[in-house]
Length: 251
Image 1 (cartoon, one colour):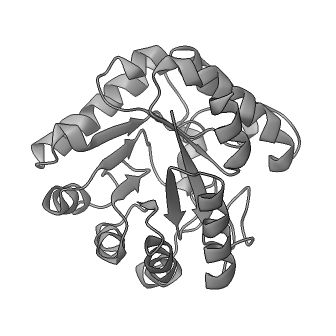
Image 2 (cartoon, one colour):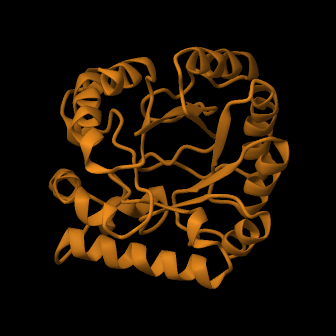
């Protein structure tokens, strides 16, 4: 199982907002992750925490592209965490090699065709709308079946747009339009997501459903979840702290 390290070049992300909000500190954290054995660095310039405001395309590009260019010099694999086709393309041209779209192509009508043209791996997450109002959309009949069926729709749309099957990765979207019970139900049924036939990314790091009063208090629960997911066939975990996850996976 791979470890994807989160690098938010944002002032307002829920767990690390403001920590790596300028070029120097973002690059320093990226180099630290490389030293810790990170497999992929996921660089984002727009917070998707519940209630977050959108940032402009120009701001998102200004935050992420210089950091991608610098870290790409070190040979590490980089994904761009964006909902915008224009940002995705700029990032790939700057040295990123994976597009991680939390909206699964729903936020930008140009995203899927852009990724198809770029011929790069694409992570499609289960999503039900922008951060401002996603919590009101956490209503399901059967959360596992509903999320699988909605993810399948995004897979079909990606394939129809010309994205190669081998380039598709799926993410059940823990914490996005889901309450704690929904998140745990998905984790309990993670084998059903793996059985869909695509690599599965799980992003649970420091999220509220893990317990604790602050993101830092959820670090151990995040590590425990990585340990639990390791034998399930999940492709990668997306986490804030790289070293303890690499350690638990090599134990």
